[in-house]
Image (cartoon, rainbow, N blue to C red; front, side, top):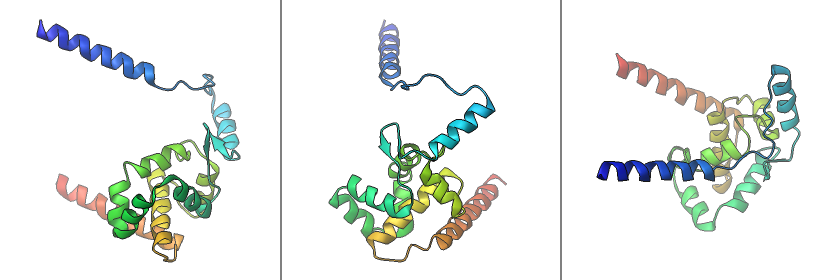
Length: 166
């Protein structure tokens, strides 16, 4: 009896969660590579995606992050070390940046970051957060240095994972 009740509650919760997900306003998905490419190129020009303003560069991203964060959050973020701050916020602020600023499907900010040598969504959100941290601490952003640091960290992480497997 308890098992049936538990299964009923679980399926009710799952149906509520599934029903609560936002449905796309345009359910037509691109069917061909050509349609997908056309949609991607259109996204690169848009100031807004799904109602969210997309910064055109790091300077605008910093202005937007200032608007979206509380003074208390900025103080905590600023006080933490660079790597600690970014690692701590990778799955919260970093995820928000990746999804809302269109890093997976392309946006004008991804176009800017691509022009600086960043292509992976994690790499791009890392650069935005590190730039914001440096801005708050009145340090030079130095995007090429950031990109090089990220690549070295990724290489070290990969080597560590390989060593742990062996």
